[in-house]
Length: 225
Image (cartoon, rainbow, N blue to C red; front, side, top):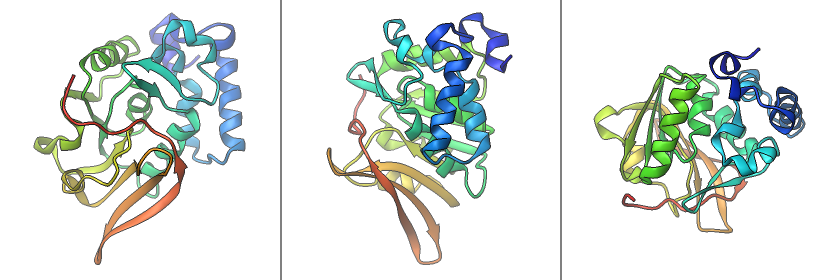
């Protein structure tokens, strides 16, 4: 029985939301190239069906993005796994800033792997729902904030890693400034239809940017709602 199953019976799921469905999802992730066992083990246990509307629960373990309301989506499991894998290699970060809490699923994955996650969400309703879920399944190492994610969380900087779950047309300098000297940032970047997932690290010459492939994310917006 998983950690989450012990804390809340709804986390176990039935039929299309059962442990067997999570196992099949992980098999697909492995076939698609995810190799980090730490990431795979977390996604095998984490009840994704709790992070989406009950009407869509039967699709929770398909490898696809799903709507969560407010014009937002819960990311495709492969993308969550890919971004998490990129974030924790070659060194596991201790403190991570997430921009765009959304459903809370990416944050929950990270919370099982790192010491502390700081997450910022501009849409109050989504953040309140995510906070309830974190309490429900016993996640205690997340600090959350209702704010404009483009500004980050400067009072808690520097961060060992920063991850964005929405795409800006370009990287936000305000976020790069909040990275620790040896930190990394994972983000989708570019206009709709031409987005790339990138990893940015610092070296003696400045920022080194690496492309991790084409992606499709909702846009990174300013302000709060």
